[in-house]
Structures are given as structure tokens and as C-alpha cells.
Image (cartoon, rainbow, N blue to C red):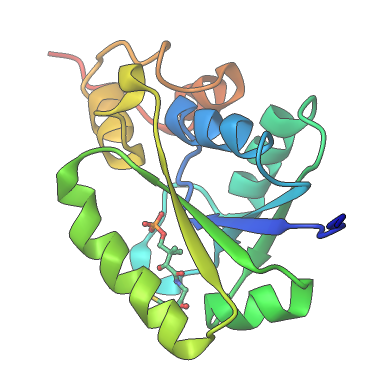
Length: 167
Ligand code: PNS
């Protein structure tokens, strides 16, 4: 029997900004799914460094050469966005055990909200296990070298946006 299921996965997050850890998950995801929609949350409450439009533009530049990947934004419930897009899988990257509790809660809440939605956890590459958008911004602000941890376009935008502390 042949199956012709087209699986559209959504990779949701804040992406403020995209890191090489995120990009690694996107690349791995393309081996599993026909389409991956990177979905940037429009979250007014979080006081982000980059606007949603800026984050989307950075993601667009970084995924340009990866077939099957698109960038979108969403507000409201993730499951509602997924229904609108005909997506049935949520992809989330897990770095350490400490990520698990929060991720488990979100996955089970999404399942409660929509029985059709499955969450797939992917392990990030070992070299990015400690990388987070928050730490990248902090280390950059304090003058640390993060050039291995973010795509070149993101590094450039950080340079344009954040003053580096002089010690
Ligand atoms: O990168 P983040 O900040 O860990 O991503 C969190 C995100 C965007 C996946 C999560 O906050 C989310 O899905 N928000 C949308 C609102 C929603 O659907 N909430 C109920 C399910 S937990």
C-alpha cells in the first residue's frame, strides 16, 4: 500500500534572534517533512530585541537555500494557526533535560486543544546544546564572541542593534 501523506510541520518560537541551534533543527527537519513553516510568535509581552518583521527577515535570509522551508508569523493559539495552514506536526528542539518539563506541558496542552496535532521533539546538535537566543544576546552585549553560534546575517544585525559593553 502506498501512502501519499504530505506532512507539513510547524516550527514555532520567538526566534529573537534565530541561532545556529534553530537552523540545525530546521535542516534536520527537512529530512523528515515535506514542508516546514517556521512560525514566529507575535508576543507583545516579551519586549523583544528584534521586531517580528525583523526576525522574519533574518530567518528568510538564512533559509533561502533550504528547500521546503517558509517563514510565517502568528498570534493567538498555535493549534489555530496550524489548522489554518493544514499542518499536523509541531517540531520543537530539545537541548537538555531542563527543557523537557516546559516542552511536555506545551505538547500536552496542544494535544488537549487539538487531538490531530502531534509534537515531535528533535535533539539539537551537540555543539549547540547550550545555545539560546537569550544567552547569545547577553554574551554579545558583554563583548563575547558568538560568531560560531549565530548565522552571519544575525551577527550583522546584532552589531547594528546592540552596543557592546566596554570593560
Ligand atoms: O521560543 P519559545 O519562546 O520557547 O516559543 C514558545 C511558543 C511560541 C512555541 C509558545 O509560546 C506558543 O506556542 N505560543 C502560542 C500560544 C499558544 O498556543 N499557547 C498554548 C499552547 S502552550
